[in-house]
Length: 495
Image 1 (cartoon, helix red, strand yellow):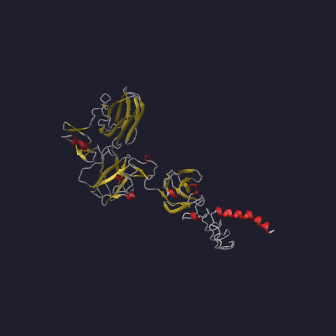
Image 2 (tube, rainbow, N blue to C red):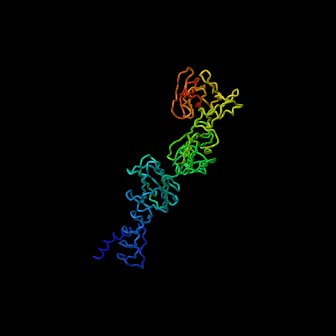
Image 3 (cartoon, rainbow, N blue to C red):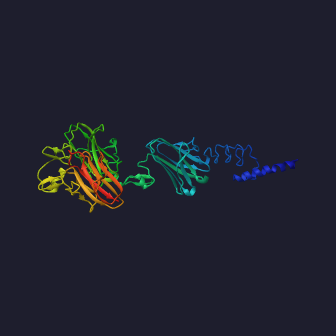
């Protein structure tokens, strides 16, 4: 009977030995003859030992995927969507762990205009770690699976509230340590490539970084609450703009009623088109200067005591330096609108009333907006005058370069150019709508209208792809007969 029992127990013993070998346990030493059923210190015990490294129910079990064990870190337990770690606005965790089937899941809630970047940093030689992002419906939104020491996912703003689950896991169950950084609303737009950034910005580390020129001493001053103070008589000469999103604000105080405020914004229109406006403390607009030439001026305002703001706003995406000055009650005969009559003269583009009269050279007429001194008198003209009719159109075939200092003078200008078969015609006219509404027509050699641009803003633009070969005429004119002289910029491109 004793032999039969031993034989019957052999398969059980073999099975137990195999199990021990499989989990990598060491054989019990010869000096320890206790079977370990109730021994709390026996390292070979498979019962309910509180120190047992292989007990499936042990609270200190290193291999239990449900309680962290060897993967325990400050974010655990977060192995399921229901137990996902909530992400605050911005957070960094150090020394997190993944191992085996352990997945670390983080949940983030973004508003309509919020974006985020999640970055896992680790040593790839210690085990590859991957990242993916899913929505609440378990759809994969994005992922990062490289062979580098870092994985990163981008979550751009969508215009709607979003909830995302960020999942970090070891490749093929590897065990490794990692740091996790989640940035919400990082400074600057997020990007995957250079094309995602505004002109002049650089996509670096998935953030659109502004050029050094934009980091001027007055930043950050992109709103009235962080406006840079500017005093009476002060000139700020070290400021810059970087695209339409970089709007600079300045604030000044008027301690007693003033009969005038003179604001001068100096820049080169070839670098960028920049506008300036003055607002009261309720952010109501008092005046605006938005010409299509170099420099902007605001003048002719009576100001009561209070706080006022100057908003310097780029019209296009270029990067450019500028200077800004403020004078209260200057010793000048100022006027509010360029081109209009003023006491004894005409209001110049600098908003200074200039007497009409004699001149000796063209420079004497600059302030009048009449750039030609002809026979001792300032006259309205430009490089291409007279070009007031189709028959006297200026021939641009020898020079299609952009023309900056042009003027409608008597109300209209004509330009002629030649197009080869299949070229695309692209014409742009920039001007200040406040000075007059400039329109643009394109006509063929027989006088038929090909395309028009009749907008109500500071520019006109038209494009004609695959144009037939022949002569074409650009007609720039004023829609209001009461206005004759409006400066403008013209660019004709043939590709």
